[in-house]
Length: 411
Image (cartoon, rainbow, N blue to C red; front, side, top):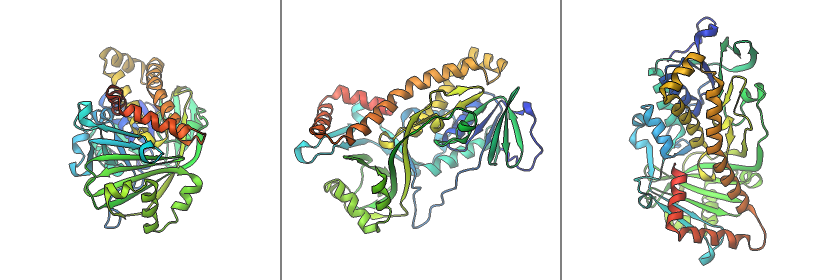
């Protein structure tokens, strides 16, 4: 991988595609395309690098990787390069409803019931960045321009990407620069995101009792608390809540924060984890939802959060983005398809229309379900809580339905 900061302006025909954005999805897409023989330029600054220390051992941002995401990384020869001590397998998932006592709904999913060893894997964001940047360095066909994009211009043969260092001309752009994608906006493909007026609050706790590889989640009316297992005696908290509550939570002392977490679960957190100790800082990120009506047009592809933004309660945001890249790999696997694309160029509209149809068909049900669950648990109508929790009880008693739901979540 070369850093192009000091070289002369690039020629128009040097690259088949420019990927705007150095997030996980953009880096995986670059590896997918380069491994198929295409010349790829990744444009953007590397996200701030997390440096663990005695006060903050774990990156506050963690991901729950699905089986399909794991297979994508494995095919790219990235998975085995992740240090085993940085990966926490999840063998069980438990979900509680928003009532109390016998009326409280409860769902429990076990890996063994689904015929797999693990339901998912918890990995820090910084760990994925490390192995992906390393893979780029050894993958022929990828260059990285560490620069800030300042504008786009449509030209006869493609796009001119104007950066603070130079102008790059390419036939195809992939926007992988996140939910607030400026590439999407400048290319005329922007769409409105639904603002939940809520934030996800993330932090890390050291725990007294072992978590046994279990991921746990509590619904509490207008908030959702998730405790995700980390290597060793630690858990990562992701607490989704209305904006007014999140801002107040960020001002609490560590002791008061722990008490708030314990009180939300009705004592279950204390029973399961014992004493909690806050380790590191607490952060918040806005929660939004939306799916782009058009994912490809005029030589621009939207991928990852640039195309679809989802509530974190199902932990599927990054997985959907990695599946965008995986579906591209599937389409390029066919020798006939690959030869056609190599002859016509990667900007071949037929390829991207097929990719768009398949990804929309896969993403739309997940977005609909996640948004529906969020709306359902915020309903404050007579009998709504009874219906929600009764429904959870019913699902928990139907093994075949539970198995199907597990398989959908793992994919």
